[in-house]
Image 1: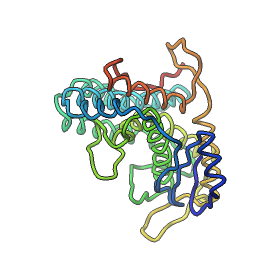
Image 2 (image 1 turned 90 degrees about the horizontal axis):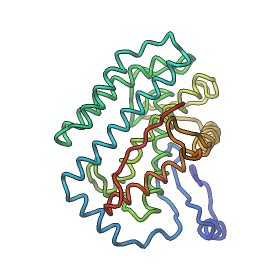
Image 3 (image 1 turned 60 degrees about the vertical axis):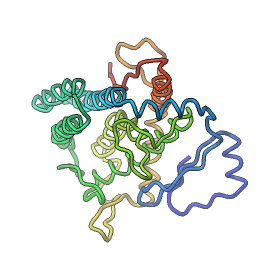
Image 4 (image 1 turned 120 degrees about the horizontal axis):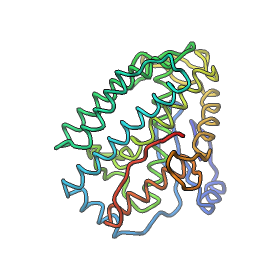
Amino acid sequence: MCSLGGVQLTTAAATALLEAGIETVFLSLGGKYRGRLAPVESKNVALRVAQVRRYDDLSFRLELARKVVAAKIANCGNLLAAYAKNHPEADFSDATAALSAGRSRAEGTADSATLLGVEGEAAKAYFTAYGAMFRGELQFSGRTRRPPRDPVNALLSFGYTVLLTETVGAVAAVGLDPYVGFYHALDYGRPSLALDLLEEFRHPVIDALTLSLANRKVLTPADFEPVSNDGVYLRADSRKRWLTFYERTLNTPFTQRGDAARPASFRDRVRLQARLLAKAMLGEAEYVGFERRRG
């Protein structure tokens, strides 16, 4: 459950949620993550010890980071390809070539600094093409944040924050420490592992949802308001509407091209990736990044 702004939660309601195993996430009206109320999580101390040992293994850390970034770049390309399939007039050849090269470079980088550079170059190519996909009043000319300076950036920033609460909950639920990551640097208060996992789902979930809501005119400029720091944010009533579409996106099952497994939702797949991370920490399985493969 997601609580926005000054929503009051009684002790009885909080107890009922905890007993039902339902996590509650608290966000400010602007979408800032405040914290979470969660049921008792895994008591698997051995897993957390293994996670810290893996963090100290520079080879393992770099290999996991490579897989996260490679999957992220692949998902950028997959979103462009999905749009081009329905809009053959769109020419994303330059961006597609850059993303393909970026993925190959990510898989073979020798150090984390180089990997950061590869991701940055891929993001530049992707977001240039992403802007060309907006066909209505809401337009996109590049990423801005802290604060977002236009409606599309407001949607992206808000969406990434909400999706981060999913990845924090998923890794904590399997017994991992959300703050010990392998691609994102450790810093006080930064849920680095949850941010690592977020990278694989940013584009297929939030970028795709933002594009859909803008092009179908579900959200228009009237749904946004300026704030004192020159930023732009979703209005309170529009955030509630956005959450309805977000939940639908997360909970709708879908199949993957080349995958015979039963349909699963994005929420299922976030949790599956968290379990796969846990197995990788214990040496029980090799980690494979999530890639959205459309049929």
